[in-house]
Image (cartoon, rainbow, N blue to C red; front, side, top):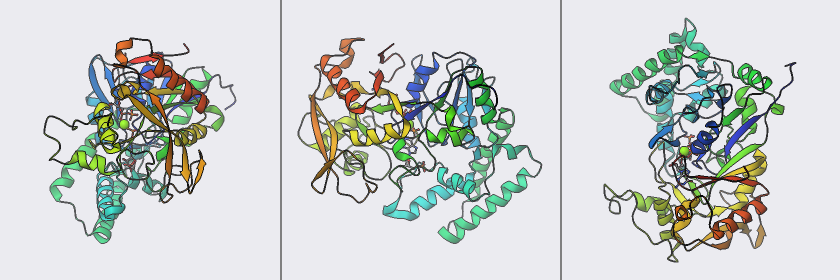
Length: 462
Ligand code: GDP
Ligand code: IMO
Ligand code: MG
């Protein structure tokens, strides 16, 4: 660490409960990078689902950083949990004419997700009944649990002679837990299928370049290359600072970049924070500005409401019923989970939560996504403060799970017609809204998302 570091890592962090549009944001930034630059993931696993449109085709990345279609090198960092079979499947979906294998590397410290981790995740969720977290079922929590229990298998282990023995040992330990704690014995055929994918994935990882995240990142920074750390999930799902226990199992905030890559905090710069023009959430847990309450997403899932072709029922965004507005927001925003296909819960933008997330990540620059989705509304609301027991505050209480929180709203008029009708200009109502957000959040909104495709973006301050 003697040579001078010439640049800092830029974390790109979701400021809400995930699915803010990080994939599209990272792909946009990646398109400006060169082959000397580096895009890394530092936490999470294939619980993430990052959607990008490239040349009219839709791709969803779960483990591979979203910069695949750019020139920069890509790295799956030490703080990740990697399901080998899922990685192989994802790599196979990348068009063959895109140079991928020559640009990708994986950290030996990353934790492997075993087939039995998937079972432990889904069975333990089931056993919680009404107290479930709503996990993605990808084995994330059991994989990180094994790391802390100091018995995890890591990418570096796959090159050891006794790896298969170690695998069998951990698998037996998991099987014991499944049977004694949950009375569950996997069917042999299911297990064989899962294990087949796992071992194919291990073979694939063996063919990849294994690189120590710390050294790779330090060298890139010394050379003055750009290093982008692509966050997964969102700040409000951080294992410590999210709304525990309704969180994921890793540090999703920018401090996680240091421990997730094995580098000192001084290497990490201010974040670019990404947020939607409203709020969504998959999974359980508190959601103060939710429209229509949890029953809205449940109602939409109901087979009686949905037919096979229409994923979302029609609803009037401009009626006074919050339930119906929530349904309309889900439909306009196509709010369906990229990893699990679950319908997302919907609600208005929540500024106390955004301020909380911005502070934790030192997000000086922001990306506002899905502004176009608000076009169907005549007016929208933004929660500026919470009323808690008669007191108004913009501070997020420690216990958002049990506190009675009533949002205090400010209403904004919406532009006429579609946002796309205005081309690369923003209507005055949209600009007013953006300026209000910039002032209240004390940050610059550098990109505005105007649709799902790569060209659907307005760049500001460039
Ligand atoms: P991520 O997990 O943060 O990468 O976000 P997801 O991919 O899970 O979900 C974001 C969804 O919004 C995806 O379907 C994107 O294609 C879509 N999206 C991203 N930005 C915009 C935008 O500005 N407008 C619209 N309408 N859709 C967007
Ligand atoms: P991206 O990167 C939205 C949520 C799950 C659940 C909780 C715990 O696409 O934004 P886990 O499987 O991690 O144990 O689930 O976290 N969750 C996400 N929600 N986007 C994600 O990723 C998520 N990854 C996990 O729904 O509530
Ligand atoms: Mg997502």
